[in-house]
Each structure stands twice: as C-alpha cells, then as structure tokens.
Length: 449
Image (cartoon, rainbow, N blue to C red):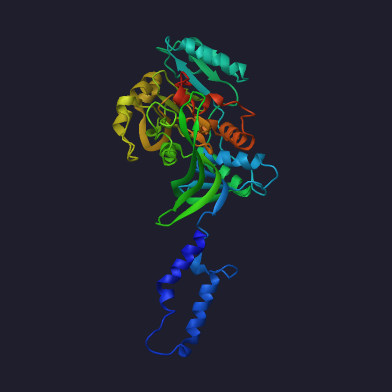
C-alpha cells in the first residue's frame, strides 16, 4: 500500500497541477497533453503498464517471512541455512537489509569458489603462566578431532629457527586443515550463493520496529512485557524515503551496530536489574591492521603466530610481506568515531614484541595500514545466538568479538535451526543465549586474541 501511496504522491506534484484549468487554451486544445497525463496515471494503477519514471525496484518488498539486519558473513550464513533447510523449497521469503551495498559457494554454471585458503596452521605461544591453560585447550581440541600438537621451546626452535623462544614455555601448532583465507572472497561467494537461492537484498538502514506487547508474569511473579515485532521500517540509502516491511522473524546480525538495533526493539529499556532492563552488551570497537615488508623475514612455512603478549602476525603473499597487530588494553581503546590509523600504536605497542620474538623484524618497514570495526561483547567476549526471551521473534547472531568469520558457518546453521525447528539441532549453542546476560553466567575462553 505504501508503494502505491508514494507513487500517487508524485501525481500531486507537477502532474497533479496539470489536471486543473490552465491559461492559454481550452481543454479540447490540450487533448494530446491530457492523453499523456492519463497514460502516466494509468501506469501507476494496478494492472497498468510500468513506467520507468516511477521505478521503485530499489525498495524492499512490503512483506517478508524473515528480515535479516546486516549483510555481513554472519547474516549471509543465516540466510544460506534458512534457504538450505527450508521445506518445501521456496517456502520462506528472506530479505537481507544491509547498509553497505558494496559487500557482495558454488553457483550453478559458475566456477568453484576459491577463498584462497592457506593451510599454514596457527602457532600459539604460551608463557609459564599460560602453559597449563594451553594444555587444557589442546586437550579439548584433540577430543573434537583437531590435529594439534604441543611443542617444547627446543622443538619450537628446531621447527621454526627464526623464532626467539625466550619467555616461551609451551607452544601449540595446528598440523592439518588450519590456516587463513580471504574473507572478502567468502563474503562475495556467500552473497552470490544466497542470491541464487532466492534471497532478496535491500540497501538501507533499519530505523524502527513496530511491535505489539502483552503483559505476562514470570514464574517468580515478576510482570514483564512480551513483545512481537510485526513491521520493520527500512530507510532507503541516500534518501528520506522509507519502506515498512511486514515480517514474522527478525535476525539481528548487525555486527558492531547490533546493540543499537536491539535498542530500537526496546531491548534493555526496562528497570535496571530486571530482564527487561538487560541490554545487549555489544559495542563498536576499532582495530588496526598493519602490513609490513621484511626481506630477511620468515619464509613460506610461516604459520599464523600469536605471541603471549597478544601480538600476532602471518605471512601475506609470497614477497616477504606480513600483516599483523594487537588488541589495545581497555585504557588504550581508540575512538571508534572514525577509521583513522594510529601509526604510533605500531611503533609503541606492536613492533617491540614483534622484533623481540622474530629478530629479523627489527628491520621491517611498514607499507600500509587500515582500521576496521567489529562487534565487541563487553560481557564475556563471546557470541550471542538465538532468540531474545521477551522480544520473542528477534534472534541474534552477533557479538563474536573478532571471531565471527571463523564461526559463521556453524552459527548460521544453529540460528536457522532455531527459527525453523524451535531448538538447536546440529550444534547445541544454548550457552550463548541472551539470557546469560541477566543471569550473570559468563562463557569465557582463555588464550584468545
């Protein structure tokens, strides 16, 4: 209905004025002009021929079964699994709303997707203080089938003679199916794949939710408002125009902005200390990545190295280029209001531990650097998966604090199963539900970057 209203609104401009009396001739003299006007009006009425002047193909549909807020790899993974698991095929209409339209698996008649996987493994270094935690982590990984070995400082020197093992008590090294890949290629591949499966895309921003609420009592007697979202308002990019989209399910996969999207739905706006007053603790954080060149640096066998200091690096290509960085402390958190790079941060915080761990890096030269955003979960730095307990048709796939790319395939499937079946099936991710923020039960990991 809105689409028709918007179009008819155009006729109340110059075209509408043309329907009145006009100086300089009778209506009979203007039969040709009136005929053209009638054609234009007919083109916007039901059953009329479409006129490019009133093209609204850029608008999202007026209704969709599922609206996914966020077109990053997590949102696209949810979209993929919803379409993959739907029965019958084509049963679910899925719309992805993304603010950045530039973010574009195998598709019929397309060449196989190459995400440029480099199987050089991860090499984590632990100090004496972190050795026991590393041993426990490796035990869990082996139980799940990962081929990971523990290395003593002497074994580490023999395998990677370019490493200075001072301060290293233990190392873990992934020997199979572990490494890094091009995230842009994965994102592009996922986008093409879900489009081929019928997923719709819209470039715009979600600015409002229209919902209904019912007052209910919990088992403890607490009164709460249970909400259901009925409509998502999408503001069209570079326009004041918006489109309401009726929907049954909303997936909050807005990454660094998912906390703001949750607030739009009223999440966290109740009294402090209550479930209604519990916010989604996901914030925008900025991180730097630096690219440097070092002709004497480690060779092709270089793994992804994570130092006990938190500094990390890996090889980039074949020309003795490397990229890396480290996370700042809470006191050092940079201003997320822009994407400017702090080059002093590299000189003061990144380069010293790099040069200490790999002596060849004493002569490195920084070639470029960039900054990016990610969704930082201030509660326990782990993901939020599944439905909200009070906004019952909003589901989360966010808060992964820099690890979303690695976990996206599993999370997408888990969220899709929860939406379609009402519970987790393949992987039980109940520990990552929103309710843990109210109960105070953290899901914490150790030795992560």
